Length: 114
Length: 112
Image 1 (cartoon, chains in turn red, yellow):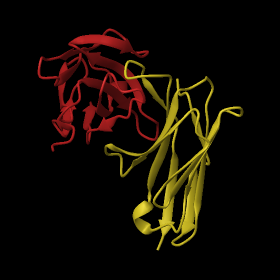
Image 2: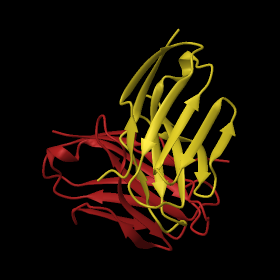
Image 3: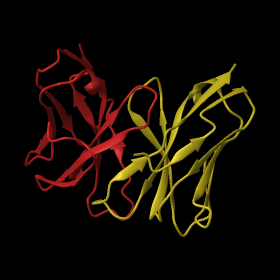
């Protein structure tokens, strides 16, 4: 049973560029959440996707957008990259109808913006 | 903004000792979860405690929850060097459509 997978593992971009990160949820899960984790901080919620729609959003600008596909996998897109976007981006999957929202995390994508 | 605040921010103990980490949060919750993160990689779910529970055990882990004080503690007994990691508490308001909000984390070092 495959867990949550993310690609790529590492990514280096320059300011102003655009980036796409990918996530495949754990088998049987239908909900994907994205988090940004700056060095030394806890993960910050970006948004959550279920049934191909954004259901919840954290305090992130519109430069951060996402998509969920019919197979439940998801993409996170960040436009006009800033130095401050350098972080570990974590994807978590869960079951929407779960009462307790236990989330399973992928290994993350380390994004460096130069 | 972070919902939870862990205390202490960093903890260093000898192997075999117990480690206790505390978490305080601000709003009413449905459940509280503890996660472990090794070397800035993905988070591993350790334990979930529901708002109507006061204590829960899983192996060497013991979690308590005091909803009147809006606080939780994680106790790791008989620590091992492999327990060295950052530990985060996370709160959820209700079901899957609610986001999980993480605290700031406690960095635990277990010295062999």
